[in-house]
Length: 324
Image (cartoon, rainbow, N blue to C red; front, side, top):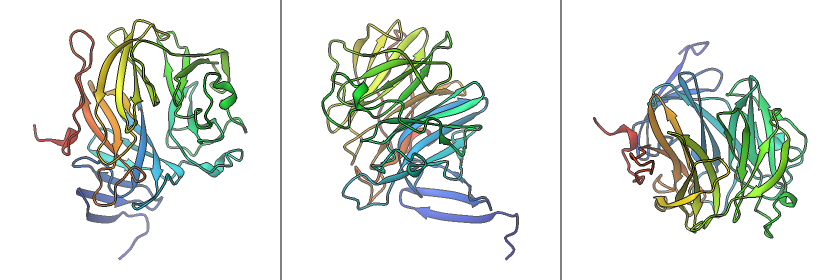
């Protein structure tokens, strides 16, 4: 059989569903998702979505294979789709070793934002702080933009534990002002300068009645309202609050997503694509090896009510792939 520049066609049954995959000679894969979890050939976690033109880009963490006793994450992954059904996995765009200062070796949650024609990947490393990598296209490859952390525990003035400087999330407001949110135990936020690699002004924290913040902040805006979603409790659920301004005051609105099956953590990404809203998260749903340390990304549709609140997200096996 000739390989050359042709595809190697692979049809395989993996755990929960079928994946029809084609392998390119440049090591990318094209496959069709049929249910949750949407990726079953690798363990993925901490999703962050970016929409550009007709394409949704999904950036994820990469857990080691099943049976782990702790988090083992050495690189990040990137996928793209135009219709939420057919996905392309691109070559590994970024590794923890690309950050020479990240001595802990943990490739924790991140978020990618576009600015001034470049793509900025904000990552967390557990012990060493939050870094930034930059690329000329969303698929990468990315390289360290600073050579040092953007934020460290020293910036987290209201925290005492060593893993507080994690889970960055970027939001660019209508006035073109970029913001960064992050934290564990305390939700911090700050303005970013136009160059996306410096903090502008002071660092603040979010507080409101009912806030029990664990980690994984995410901000989106719909119909003039700002939404802060975040992981709460442990095992984690996803809660949310609403505000009329990016800095609040926020009003607690309740639990949006219940405990992610077979996983102590949850981590959401909320995005509008092709006129639909999507709630992207992870659980331990691959049987029998899925767990808190070998997680998998899933997708459900999300709806805003007439009063601006969000309908609760119910995790399902069929997800967005149920028959219409």
